[in-house]
Image 1 (cartoon, helix red, strand yellow):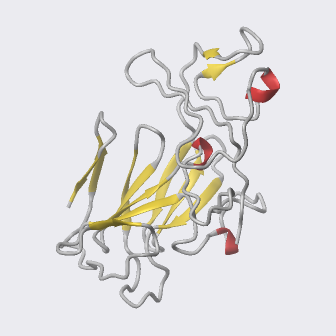
Image 2 (cartoon, rainbow, N blue to C red; image 1 turned 30 degrees about the vertical axis):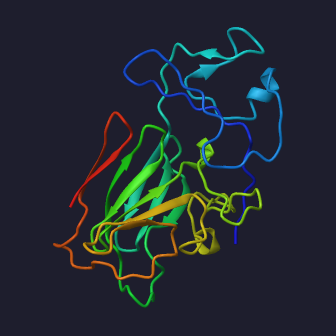
Length: 227
């Protein structure tokens, strides 16, 4: 099982059709210690997007250059996973199950993940065409994860051997990766939102039944799924 210590300071700035900035220190992760960030060395511990500290040292200001998050989320339809890829290097940074592992009593084959969308905070939603579900994956780099075992450490998939791909035990089992946040079941008479690994089934495995294909995020950060 891979574990990766999250940094308690992450700054993410999003430019949303205007010139205002949003600084986000944490989403779902617990703050396990306190610290005041005041100098350049402190800020370098985090991830700065559309912010900089070069023009005036030891303080943060908006960058004149607009930057987008360097991640793309790619469904692996035949496997039932989603990969997070660095768009600048092509490296696979993480891979996540979005369905129960093969062999689950109430499932067979792949859930056929096909469509993804990114919300206003950089998190991924994916639709599973042969499961009747949508799954949310948190952006680790923005501190979005849920500490299910309350150990203060984010258990998530990452490229431990730095070979640019996720292989072997770098892919955590379904229900273990703390960046896989929610499984939303859309199957009629079984609807609900579940912690991954807690829903016992059944799933709608018929491709042309409850089959999420179109996903979109609105201005209120709500997900719309076309089934």
